[in-house]
Length: 307
Image (tube, rainbow, N blue to C red; front, side, top):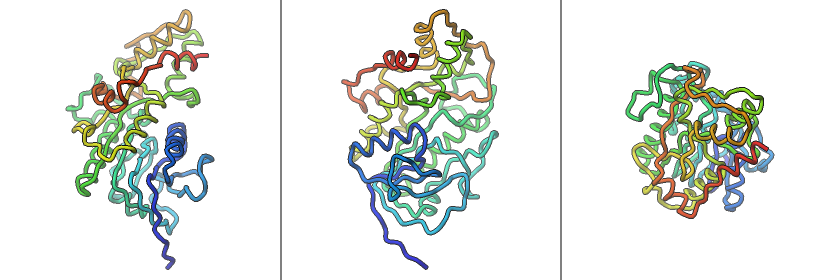
């Protein structure tokens, strides 16, 4: 049996491909932090020494995995997949599950002291319930995404409690930026309106939140620099948004003002399979985290995206 020496890094990132991961890696580089990325695909933004293959879609991973110890683990939850047989199967549209972080640690031979989990608006489940859904509502029968998000948060909190460690959950949001994927939601709104079609949304969709990639970058940077997250950790976790709250209805209306003869229809659809619930961010915490000097340039970002 071959024994591998334990390596130490400051940060580990699980989920290393895609728009969000690219910007998270840029943040880590700018902060001059040592890091390792666990991902299904190799990334052009990191060296081979910083990469460890791991695929949540499959329980079997090539062995041996080098033992690693880090201060902070960032779980980029855009990743989908089942994790071992102990992980519950929630999704009605595919394998979308939240990992048991105790099992994940053993599987990856990875030790970490702090955990950041992120809840994106990428994993959806069909439902026909009224929206918005409240935090006190039972999410189990509402949507696979809602259950998955809740399970991810609960698993992270359980890991932190068991290990007397810190965890924080950033949820839920849709990321946008100049170099974002054209299939991402904000560009879909622009495309539909530019084609002269009305953009239709369900009653619940109007409450989705949009956050600039710059805001997420600054949030992650702030958390990594702080030794304690106690001031940000509440029972309902931390929502990420700009200090001024932008929901989908507001975003669509702003876009329509910039595109001649465009039309927005709220409630034109009863539901669609990618419907997802949303909660209003806690703006007091966001302002505290990002600082009062943070300027919202959302309208300028929209103009760049449209042009």
